[in-house]
Length: 199
Image (tube, rainbow, N blue to C red):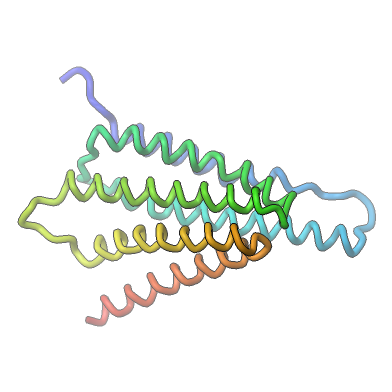
């Protein structure tokens, strides 16, 4: 066969996009020269908090993304297109992070941020489904680790629905709710892994 899809190239461009997105978000934090007033210090801390939450969100996506492309995994052609859509949405996160950082009380900024997260979560879940469909025979079931990762991808979609609701009703609380969602997801994953290991 002369022409075929390359999983290595897919992983390489994906990792490159993740690296760029993780890096450029910090460039939007502006440092004021001279003595910082109380207001300026509060603004700077809000910007740093917004950046850290967004960084954690993207790092979480990278963690799940690398789970999708382990050795021996067959990647269906439709996943290449879906992955590009996923990466294009991921590239919007620095933009919506900057908008949210500059407009903490803006419902439009909060809703846009939540919509982008929800769309990324949905693409991620669809990628998990495609990988499972392409690699799991009808007589097979997912092993515990894979079942847990797939369940976490589903939970992330549900939690992103909560983010949308909060962004519409209490936009000021969105970052705190996202922070709580990250802690909840990480804590749940850790707990389930402990329970599975001792079972």
